[in-house]
Length: 98
Image (cartoon, rainbow, N blue to C red; front, side, top):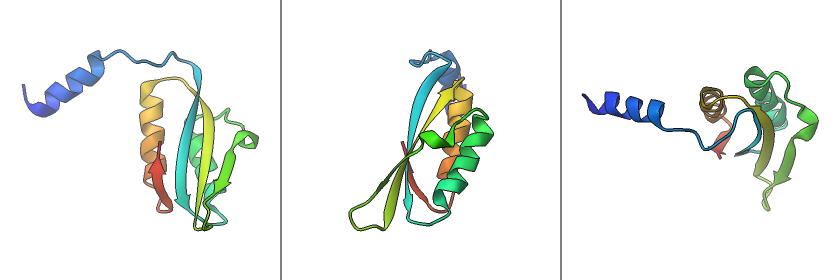
């Protein structure tokens, strides 16, 4: 078995610590931009069509160069969360996804 096959096997066999479905907060730190919140909300909607954008929490950094956003989604599977993390992290204005 190759290292890649072993890692995939471990991921498949490792039970999730999250009960699905559940409310799951995702924190994103990105560069300050007037379109950031809307762009990221659209990404979140793709992965959770029932997401309510009114629940987004936003905090500016002290210097005003960055903004922190918290999206609380309804997590339905590990695959959903993994895909959402990848999509958010690939956005050019995003620095960190937690």
